[in-house]
Image (cartoon, rainbow, N blue to C red; front, side, top):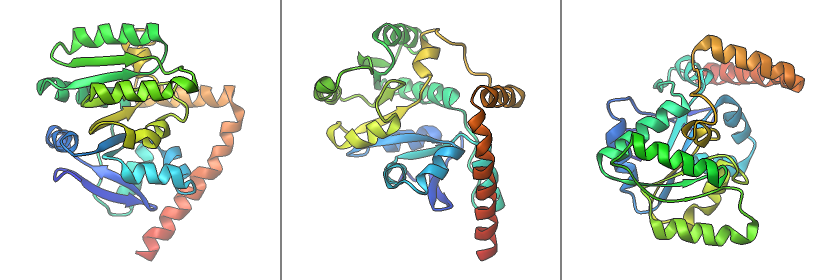
Length: 246
């Protein structure tokens, strides 16, 4: 764990605390490690899944950096009197990460979406981050028999960062399952990053009103999501019990 990072635990799940000023040094320390490590965006639902899923919990425990992207996680840390991590959003964090790597003339490999979208994303990244070396790209919708070839190509390219998007079987778990086959470096998975970079969808609006609107209309189109209220209530109960115990 990099010196600029403090790791706390919420209900047994690790979360990393690193402020904006320390983030460049933390990233530099992490990509200098001798093995492949993952940066994981942790939202509320993934935290709750990881409590009861050993593979998800292992992936988070082994991550180089666990970045909270849910205000509930930040509030939980404050409620439990832990160090409070800054709330981050996935797209701005990836932009910041790529900027840090560009300053050091580091490299990135793109894996995700369709080949058309990943090539459009590559062109956009080259224009935005001219000092960043893009050492390879591959669409994520590859047949199982091509998986070993894809992994070999990534390993030979030895990127500082493997940037992965939608289409991978298992999402971020695909990376954690294959991490021992990659060269030392970092990886990060985010579902919509290539859609945004390719211009297929606009940059996400992270204002609270826009997020509430997306959540409300998402629940209307997927009414079973209203059942998640029980998961929230269970979460609050667990937090209360942990605070009383400690």
